[in-house]
Image 1 (cartoon, rainbow, N blue to C red):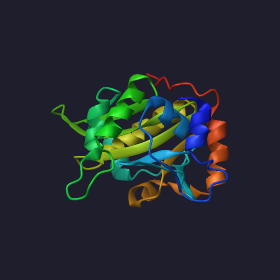
Image 2 (image 1 turned 30 degrees about the vertical axis):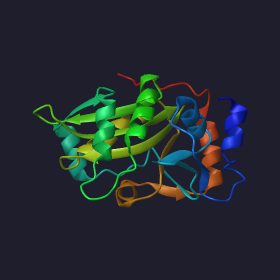
Image 3 (image 1 turned 135 degrees about the horizontal axis):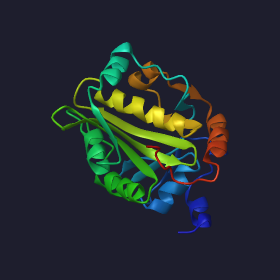
Image 4 (image 1 turned 135 degrees about the vertical axis):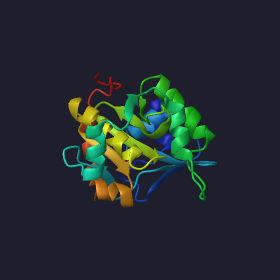
Length: 218
């Protein structure tokens, strides 16, 4: 599909007053990249609903607040950390809900796995001493912009330890914007905060820069 087709499919977030931007479409790489570079993200599959929230929740990469417990586990090396070793499995871990329905349905996993294959989506894996995946984080990186999609923990603080290492890599790479979409109790505790949608879109435009995939520093 062409840029013009997507321009017609998605409402312009700068002028459209509602959070819901569009309904329908698919999880093609072209559509997802257009969405993320315009401040839009999908939140359901059947049908696909696309949003640009006002206000928008973000992290300041220099002011993330990890508890002393999490920092101690990082220093102790309690977990082995890897990047991009098990992207679909991390998404499956994030999709697990003991009682509630999940928005990370098979179409999401297939679409984002293709984004990952092409270098636009990344995962952090957290492994315990028995080499079992017990936590993880995944998201989309374009230019100096990172959209954090979801996190899971099957052992206490495992996901937060993964997020700690993700922030370290993003800071090393000079990232300028970390989007967490909407505040919840966990992200609020970690230091996320809300800004107006138009301020978010201005910051997004600056962070995208030349819009290259992220090469994670070793």
